[in-house]
Image (cartoon, rainbow, N blue to C red):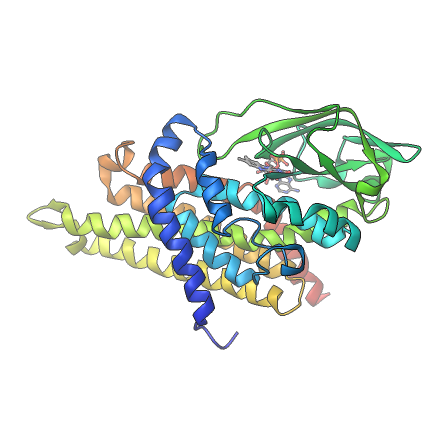
Length: 382
Ligand SMILES: Cc1cc2nc3c(=O)[nH]c(=O)nc-3n(C[C@H](O)[C@H](O)[C@H](O)COP(=O)(O)OP(=O)(O)OC[C@H]3O[C@@H](n4cnc5c(N)ncnc54)[C@H](O)[C@@H]3O)c2cc1C
């Protein structure tokens, strides 16, 4: 990755996202966070500007952005509000299995509708019994003629209450573990599809998260992605693609935390001078800067690797894990620099700390990322 400069097109996408984030998202971030409000009007505007469905190629009506371009956009959005960004990029997560595992006919059937009209979609993998061990799903898919009957429950599903389409992972036989899992595209209006109520969350409160239950929902065979047993691989390959933008989301939170902390350190005075002139605070700001830059570079490197045709499992795990851990430390230090005011909801940094936490958990916890990284490292020495 020798060239670190952004192209004209990349800069203009970054500017578009920055302007939208600062004018449309940031002014509503605190209110949506406080009320736990899902600001659908903002998501609709993001869709109108082409800031949703970032991964859909042009042949299906999307903008065909590279992963690096997607990351530039996601970082800008997350700088304004990580919760809104989670809801905006959940469509990419939900549509990626169709891009990865869908036939040409399925791609043409499901994807253009998201680009011609505003719709939300959800990715349904996690279950109440566990998210990390995705091979141990309990949601059942029982073949009945030219349909599958889905029964089970998914939890923590982003946009669950508002989605019109779900990509769902279910097993034909739990004893088969990973090789029994299938992926399905499920329309919300299918009888037996029951989204639950919105969860009360610590952060990302502008995003909606719920259970989605399947009570004997009949899914036509033509909505199965790939063959029977391909679901686990489709889910893992999806996450290889979508973890890098989570690195970008974490970087956006970290940049916002550094921006607030640096500006505050020049205004707040103790012992007769701005706290930014005390060396202890300067060291914090310097460490935050170094970690932030490393997070961004690892995210860009992962995007570049995947954009150049590699799967990028290792790179995306490194980017997501490092950037989210760094974002958590940077938000924590920003709050410390604000002192007591940092702990108050009148100031923006406590929200950043709450929002940073999620990136260490979702799309595969950071413990699982470290397992992925170590496994690949050790295989190179075996
Ligand atoms: C706000 C929010 C939004 C989400 N959105 C979605 C979504 O849209 N779609 C979706 O499918 N899921 C979603 N998730 C689920 C998320 O991906 C899972 O929470 C995550 O994968 C962890 O699964 P779990 O919560 O069941 O934890 P568990 O798997 O029960 O793990 C509990 C703890 O044990 C650790 N652990 C587990 N196994 C190991 C191991 N082998 N070694 C070391 N440590 C281990 C984990 O890292 C974690 O710290 C969301 C979650 C949240 C909180």
